[in-house]
Length: 363
Ligand SMILES: Cc1cc2nc3c(=O)[nH]c(=O)nc-3n(C[C@H](O)[C@H](O)[C@H](O)COP(=O)(O)O)c2cc1C
Image 1 (cartoon, rainbow, N blue to C red):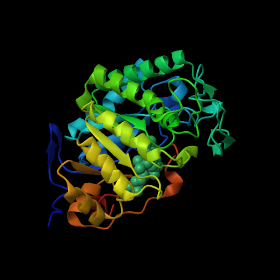
Image 2: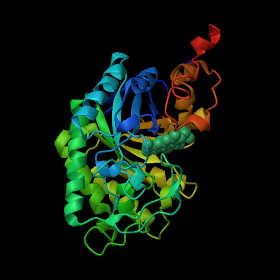
Image 3: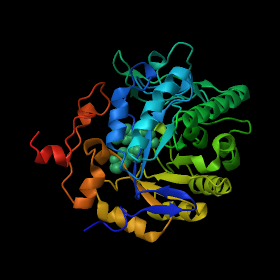
C-alpha cells in the first residue's frame, strides 16, 4: 500500500510537486574546478522522482568557494554546465531548485580561485580546521565587509539566481542556514558590526532580507525559497538570548515576500520543535521541514499530516538510495550510507549505490 501522505501530489498556492518528499541540499564535492559535470547530471537524474530536488550548495561568487571542488554559477562556462543537470532532471519529469551557498568565513585561501577573498560581516574567524587539497588547515580570518562589499555580494547573488533560471532551474534556494554568509550576519558570534547590519534584531536580519527581496524581484518570488536553521551551532554559530525574536522577526518579514517556500533545518537539538512549528505558523506558506526525518518515515508522515502546506526534506538516505521514492512506496529496506565517500571526487559512493532493480537482477 502506498504511504498516503508522503507520496501524494502536492499543490499549494501554485507550488506544485509530484510528491511531498524533497531531496535536501547536500554538498558532494565532485565539481572539479568548480564546474558541474556529466557525473553530477547522472547523480541528480537518478533521483529525479523526488518531489523536489534542492541541489548542493552552489557559490554565487569567487569569494564563496570556501571548500574544495564545490560548484559555482557566476561564469558562463559554469552556467552552461548546469544546463545539462536541469535538463537531465526535467527529462525525467523532476523539479529542481539550485541552492545558492556563499561560504563567507568558512573558507581557506587555498580553496579559493584566483581573485577570491574570504569575507564576513566582521573580522571574526570560525574555530577549527577546514579541508583543503593540501590537507586540513585552520579556517581563514575574513575581511569585514564594507557596505560596498555588501551591495556587491548581493548583486553577485542576484546575477547567480538569474543564471540559474537561464540554465533551466525551476527556482533557487537561498542558503541562510548552517553558518554560511547569510547566517553569519544573523548570528551575534560572527557579527559584531556597529552599523545598520549589526546589533539589533532588525539590523542582523537586514542582509538576509535585502538579499531575498533583490533575488525575488529579479527572478520572481515564486521561484525563490530560503533555508534557515534557528539555534543551529554548526560552523561556529553561537546560542544567544534573542534567537527566538531574531527568527520570528525574520520569518514575519519573509512572509510578506510571498516566497516559494521556507525550509526549516533542525541542525541542533537545542531547537524546540514547538519553535519550528511557531515559525511555520508565522510564515503561513509552503514549509519544508528537514532534520533527522530521513530515517523515520513515520515521523515524516506525522509532520505532513499537520498541514496541507508542509513538505519534508530528506538528506543522507537520498545519497545511498537513488530510488528512495520507490523504496518508500514499497517499504523496502534502505542502503546504508558510506560516510567515507561523501566528499570524494569520482563515481564511488556517488552513482554506485544499487537500486532495488539492480539488486533483484543480481548485478
Ligand atoms: C554530505 C552532506 C552535505 C550537506 N551539504 C549541505 C549543503 O550544501 N547545503 C545545506 O543546506 N545543507 C547541507 N547538508 C545538510 C542536509 O541538507 C540535511 O539537513 C542533513 O543531512 C540532515 O538531514 P538527514 O538526517 O535526512 O540526512 C549536508 C548534509 C550532508 C550529509
